Length: 407
Image (cartoon, rainbow, N blue to C red; front, side, top):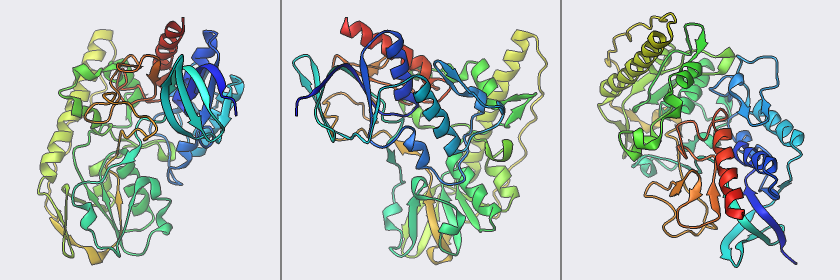
């Protein structure tokens, strides 16, 4: 079969791939988008009760802002997919669904890709396969009893799908907190293993939390402004988009009856142990809340707007938080410690990824393979690079770099 030829190939039909395609079209660059499943399919892999944690007005893909009648609401996973499908249709994007890429290698005039639909030759390629690909489990997770159900967030569907018994949720970031709340609201006994996760109120002074994060410049923070490259893996500020949006963090979950414990420290025989660091993790989270409050106060002073007067955090007492659980008391363990970059084996790029699995790049352009680009990567350029409110900015820069490469 002769190879399909195109100037630019976009791999991935999610928000990053569609935004990159939109920007390439605007520059008059011939391109094709390939998606191994269907447009927006990664969102459909989330649990049944999932809602976005960012308000609808923050859907800012280039050429199509949020098109519904609830700008301050929050979309379900199906709502996000519908938005992306309408975006692809409106842009008349050349999306080829059901096309899986099995290899990519340099060729005479760019790259040769082998796919389930035949070979493709492209002069430039942008990889948009998601911010993270591999679920993370802490050390010691492999020692859990074989008969105890242990799953990652991508395998969780809804409360009744789990065996009877208490549920241990490991990780108190956005996903872990939302799942823990869904479970306790369904009448399940829930234990939440907490690490370091920042928190803030959902609504502040009449504006959503994200509005403040954008206006203060927090979401424009670049990697070189972080205390270390590892800080890229820190949990996002926790809040919920469920039921119209509300506060959601370790304290609010404890008030609902969730048992808080420290970090997961492994399983020894029939006993699951936790570090005695719950109070320290809560103190760290309160410090991040204070940092956010300070940014908001400075913004208000600079613009001459009213300070919303965020209060001090409530005192936290770790009394009643066990340091161990009998595994037999649990029906399931859900690991919600986030995901890590893990680019597929078909992307054989020696020296192309750092020690944490992130692409070595500048403004989306690979530092080791001219003509290869990335978009939709967490902290590709800024904190919002993989989000629906920020991926469009990166897509425009990446498309411009591809156009320049193509000459």
